[in-house]
Amino acid sequence: MTAHEDEQMPIADRSGSAPVASHDIVWRGKVFDMAEDEVILDDSHSVIRQYLSHPGAVGIVALRGEDGNEEVLLEYQYRHPVGAHLWEIPAGLLDIEGEDPLTAAKRELAEETDQKAERWDVLVDYFTSPGGSEESLRIFLARDVSPTGTTFEREDEEAAMVTRWVNLDEAVRLVAAGNLHNPSACVGILATFAARAHGWQTLRASDAPWMRSARQN
Image (cartoon, rainbow, N blue to C red; front, top):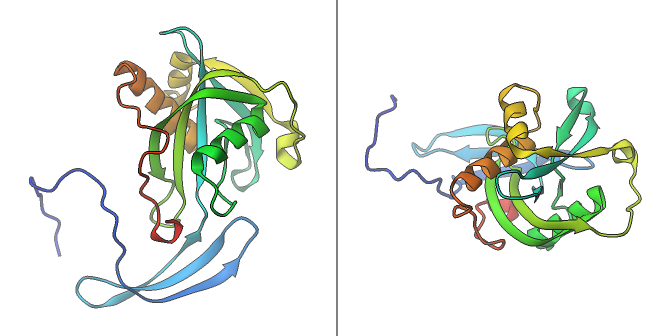
């Protein structure tokens, strides 16, 4: 079967899972599991697909400063799977059953940075690695940011975490230069830059619909 060009098909991702003949969890972990499905394709033959079963996550671009001179809040922490210390944006798992994503984002911003925000919008949604993981991630833009007035007790890698406010234009340059590698940071920074260029008119409401894995809805 060869690919063909379709000028009529809308450029919009569409939710809808192929039929699954069997679904098994072949390994269980602390944060995510490994799943194995037998998937029935359109022409009625099946394939085996293994992927990370993941609860999903939220990320936050915290923004402060005057128009045209905004700063984003980055945090620096160790990531063992890639053996590197990375500059990231605040983020966290949606691992509390039934928790609203915005509530989770507010909690993560406070727990990781001791900051709060009065204004919240959706910047961008994406699947981190759709060929091998069901993780879906929503990045919020948090504005009117101020300190919470309390210090959260952090553990493990977060205990040594460092934060810094970075000029948005400089952050974009750092992404392009290959200095930043965390996907949420790169996507969030570039999405914020694009939203500013459009006068923030591309932002969505904080409760906007979110296309996630069928098992997460």
